[in-house]
Length: 278
Image (cartoon, rainbow, N blue to C red; front, side, top):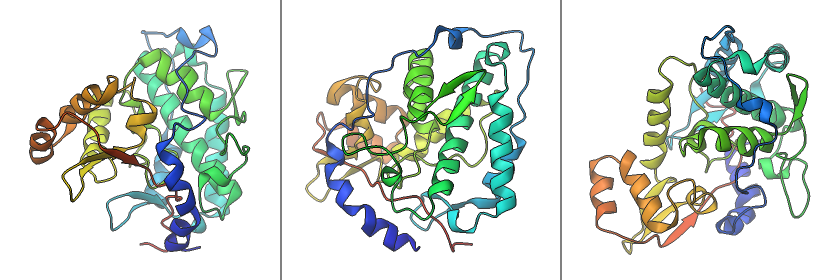
């Protein structure tokens, strides 16, 4: 399957992206157990298998979007990814420090998303995997057991990451396997340097046209992520624009400073497939 075919397959979904999707609900903790953390950091998690997978199969596309060569992933690498997720499932999360927990959940989410796409491959959009007419996609189905608890992708993002950390940069850390989404990170998140990694992810997305851009009429067009989760980004146009300026490079920041409204939003649900790219 070529990337062009993937784009055409998902094109019909892009127009509907301006509406709030079924999965964009407010954060709500799924279990108080995830609130506990060990600041003494008595447990470390080895994310090297995920680092190896990313080094082998993540590639940057010509339009500056991180892609995955799904169609070329070997059985050996699929098995290694599955074993990595099995190891994460046995981690006593409460014995991790808070930064270690963030890295754990973000890496788990991203690796589990890739595994989900690989299991359904070939596919034109992640929204074509499972789900229903009113809640398309694989996000609500339990897909991993962590510390004895069955969790879905939605549980990880909306029931753990968003309500515990209350940090808009979460949206730049987790990848939903779509061209419109912030990039799949080049390497696993790790506790050392976490703040810098999250800031860099925000800068990369905000300054890419799929994050924020001005159209030929001078109107500000943003990713639909900023509409779906606008409360996370400060609420309303003013809050979102202020958030964008925090991470915008000088030219974009200057233009953002001269506007007080968002004129439109869009999102490309085509799969982030880089099969065939070097």
